[in-house]
Image (cartoon, rainbow, N blue to C red; front, side, top):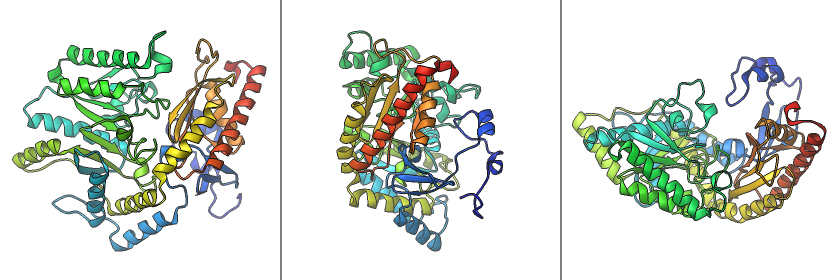
Length: 462
């Protein structure tokens, strides 16, 4: 596609600072320019086709190039391209979407607040929880508890909840009061001989000890992804969420389920709360709500929280929080059409059924010399690469082998995500069994290519 009148060169993008990358190295090698998409595939500006095995950024449920979403956006743009939700005003798509989400979500969640992203949503969660506790006269009850390796966003507040060092280093985070407890990754953090349930009990005891150390009167909420995504695709150990919820209820600590990645079918249930039997006070949704065709996120809250917030707002005279594009009619219209497609095409069941195939195909690679653990649920999985399978020793330095796999996967027509030395998979919910097998075969070739390279070079030389 060189010479195309609308094509761009590396120089055209040299002024762009790209997230989650080495900015200096980017200047040297330039980006891959993705030009178009169709189904589970995307194409670069050279015409090369790739299986998009991460659905963009964990988010394109119905695949790329879905005309119904384009048409929904176009219809709404022609009718009402924008309106706000301030000053007792709203618009039809945002009302219909809120009503629909309330019907879909866990029974106790009765209200929806819209933002533009998961980061803004979790920012809003922090403010709502503080506001609610101030309304209850619990002015000290402001601290959050999150987990190491968690990802909850990237703004000053939500980035404080995130438990990934790279997202906090040199940004002067955390910015809000938060304690991070042990990541619930059995493979890495269980003690020798410890069962999953015993590991879960230990983590619940740690949570309780942290609450008591900080003082229950100061701890407002526990936030967690039901299945952790950007931290390395980490399903919790058996009984973990049951035990965590028991501790939180004992000390009046709100439970925030961050389903920005998990929600709308990813695990083979509409929400991961259903899969793990979580009864949250707050549910955070984004990404697959519009298949990321438009920016949108939702904070779902219980009636109890809503009543506290609404009563306090009536006393003050306003609820002084919101965004210019909260409840924007175009993303809301796209979300409604996206949810129609998910339901009509039975994509939640497809994620469960085809997800079983994906999990089995990836687990068949467990004997590969580079693979330490394969984990996941439904259509989300992580493959952890290790230097020594018996000891679980990591590569030194961490991330070099993962980066090599990421790069070589592109050569094999496959886009994955390298999280250090964990390779993440999260394909569109529309993927078929045949396409899954093709995806995993390309990945196997990539692993073999990388293993061959490691026989020739030391990790540090990659």
